[in-house]
Image (cartoon, rainbow, N blue to C red):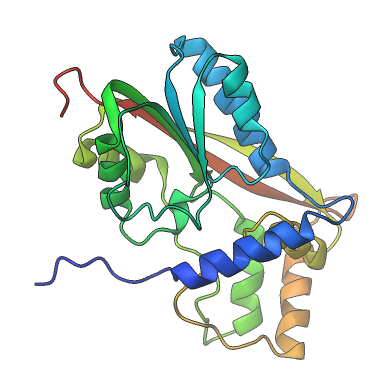
Length: 255
């Protein structure tokens, strides 16, 4: 039996989505609330655990907002985008006292391997904190996409990790003091099209390796109707964005 993980996500599509994100973010009013929340939460966590200043690696922060916050706390920061580091391979450098990952590990094929590489890139006693969207995200969009395709659903939505699975993955990856928790952001929408626009603004479009057929005009209308069927009295649909946080350390034994 092959030990190679299944190819669910495509790295070239990940990079293409990132490039489109950078272009869309130059538009006034582009959505960025998911990563903004991650950054604020991560800064609070680092302060809470009283992380000592040291060598820090930031992965995936396309806003550039986290680095100056860490520098102000005394860290020497190395920043890497998803085009500069492949989390499924050993890191080109190591010895980091802190690794902060924002919104990238939910689209890697070998998540256990990625978590092991993160641990190995830490200095002894170093800490990792990563955040990404979890399985409780976008339930109304999932319902809409199923309605669009009818009896022959296509793969249009990413498979996602839940809290229990994430905890098991951290144990498997050998993280010390592993902790997994989740929180939910909620945003309201008057249309499916606005939700999709917000997702594209934030680089949350599909990066699946398999391409789903384009929605027909009738399918898109079914999706819009199914989405609005969950609207409240104000005509707006409240959509969930569940953010998982995984944190842990490399043990003092260096393993």
